[in-house]
Length: 133
Image 1: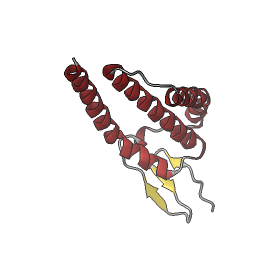
Image 2 (image 1 turned 135 degrees about the vertical axis):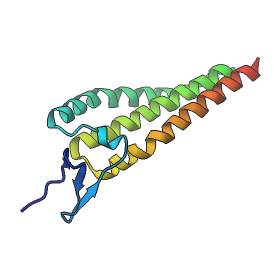
Image 3 (image 1 turned 180 degrees about the vertical axis):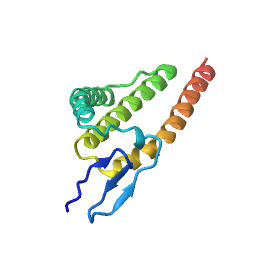
Image 4 (image 1 turned 90 degrees about the horizontal axis):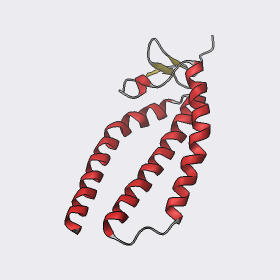
């Protein structure tokens, strides 16, 4: 009997290399697409998003940022968000193709960290704009 490396939608588990079952229990990993149709759509969407966000990130990081402080902070926040979106698109593309368990763990770890980073970044941006005037 062979074991497939696919995620079982009923048990939320993924077969490991030796046939053992590893459980995926995080809030984000449970909502990752499991059906073939959903994964094909995810691949097609990411085939558009990966080059677009990669090109935008490359353009933002090679372009000279604005000199004034409030615009410079917003420029860097936008550049970081584009870079983050590029990494998420790459990971979701890999998930749609191979569904490795480590990507589910990364998504679960990024969920709360990303919310904290967004909250703190926008707070710092707002504070720097208030203090600049």
